[in-house]
Image 1 (tube, rainbow, N blue to C red):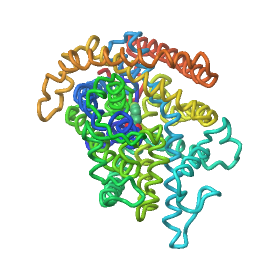
Image 2 (cartoon, protein in one colour):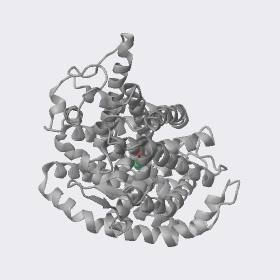
Image 3 (spheres, rainbow, N blue to C red):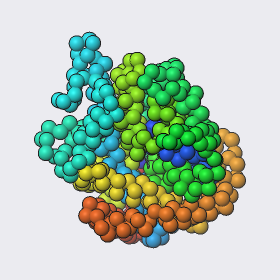
Image 4 (tube, rainbow, N blue to C red):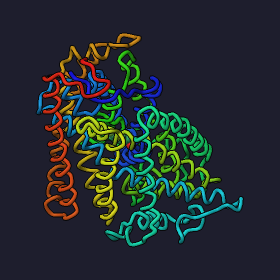
Length: 558
Ligand code: PFF
């Protein structure tokens, strides 16, 4: 197969592990996961979560690492190129591979918007931390340095007005809206890092961000764990909060004052708990969304991908279950009680309303609030880079453009989507539509497409050989069998349930809601663009292969 792109590689094995872990560890770990745990019965959620981790995340992410490296060895880095190379140029599969770049790219369009909320909260807290030194500042004219708003209603009102929840277009009315400026800055930082390249941009940044995230998280956890039973709280301690996460049964007090014992089977027999747990694993481990496949295509052929894959997944789980589990869930329970879920609607409320409220009540809360939002911001940036890189690689390969030109085109298209999200902020409707279709629905579809591709087109034997290549310890081959006989049917069942429960209402929403229609039109245009691009690129690659044309100084026949 002709090699078409200039060779880029990760600088080191630890670099690629940190980059993939950086992709996985993000807002999904620190905001979405605690929200899901609290909303789906605490400990009872953890059972399907751990089952999905073992049956889906670990084997499927290994298969994605193997697929990506195989494509990379043939000179391709985008999911389109990888599917093309591995399938031997089958157009249908290539187009599906091309479409694989869509979901991460569109997720990034709203992900950077949320990233900018984290940046502004971090800066606002920093203003409060520096105030005693006479260096205090405030990003928001109506708020003193720091974030001390006294009541949950005030925090909620502040968050609502920050993101323009009451009116579409409100963020654009203030020419100097800090949120718009912050969103532009986040996007610029993102695309600049990608422009700098795989090892000089993405890898370097992940190596700096990873220890910072860890230090911030540990400091916040130590603070939360040493609070005792805080005044102004619900009378529960840190250990009660941990118990909420790990104990499937517990007592809850109803509004009538009646005390009820929860039953583990109520949660386990509810398909919603399984769907939520599986969807959380997809999003959090970043599987089958093109990111791992693209990142692993830059690995050198002789590196141990089984170990790297396991290390990246383990790092993600450590950050999610241990760090986020210790940092966000216990304080919510300590201050709001066992019925915390009834008191906040979404993961956003947990992060941007409940926890700021909690920081205000704890000693040195401004400082810990700053650390918390700084770590969210850093984790979000390392994830966003991986959301865009598959599309940049796609443009580089299919147009045969330089990295710079590809980054500029990706940034322009990204901006259009981000403008839609930032304009239609009433009840965050555009963000919700983008999130549902691209971060909830599409991963289910792509995980099935990719697993079918690996099993039926590439073949289990090739997958096993690729996985073993370069491994210091021979990876157990039952992983291959698990992907085929366990993960795949499990995914089909879960997707069936998910579609049955969710799709009807959401399709009706698209028929009735103007913003959903506009967003859908935008997704369809991107699908069309990616399909045409995929067909055009594959036809050219095939012609070049037949003619044996050398197009790149690096070109060799692999
Ligand atoms: N895993 C990231 C998070 O938890 O926030 C989000 C993400 C990154 C999803 C990259 C998908 C992806 F390809």
